[in-house]
Length: 191
Image 1 (cartoon, rainbow, N blue to C red):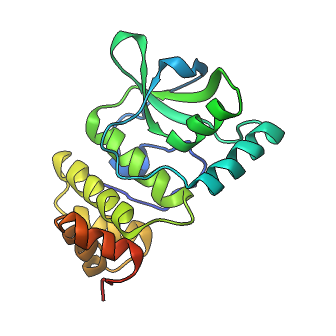
Image 2: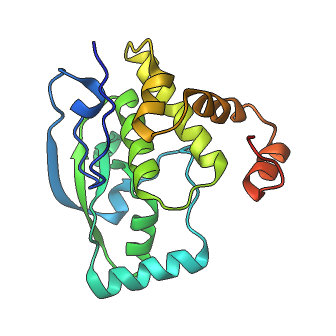
Image 3: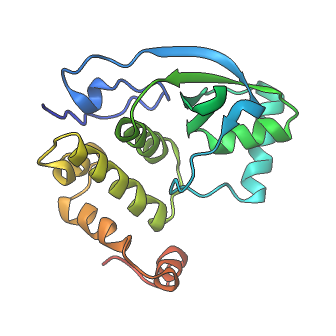
């Protein structure tokens, strides 16, 4: 099985062939999903926006609507787990929306990790080192579970980083919380 980690088109509508080569494409089902049916992805590595940035997003959604659909997967009890879009869901809730435009992808855990990490790595302009580290680790674990023998190299090529840089970020996921906080605050660097 080959893994083509070509550049993301950054639209939020990911083509699984970017990750999985010749495997059959994942079908997208687009629909409005009531906010009360959306559940967060527990332990996903990305932090919620600061109050200032969240308020900016809320105002943008009030003025323009939600411009980029969230990505979800079916969960138990008729609910949907958010793969990508936790901040957009919270902003829609604060803006008074009762439903959110969504792309439903019926994918396994490894493919969901790949989508979650890629959408955040490609769409967010500001990422903490810890967020980047855990996203790379999630991708490495998912690609390895799916049979890749060069997961770290593929990730490095996809994001234009050196393989050693990806390895350093992944190694940071083993830091104790106090050191991770120092890394995120800039008091500790990867160099």
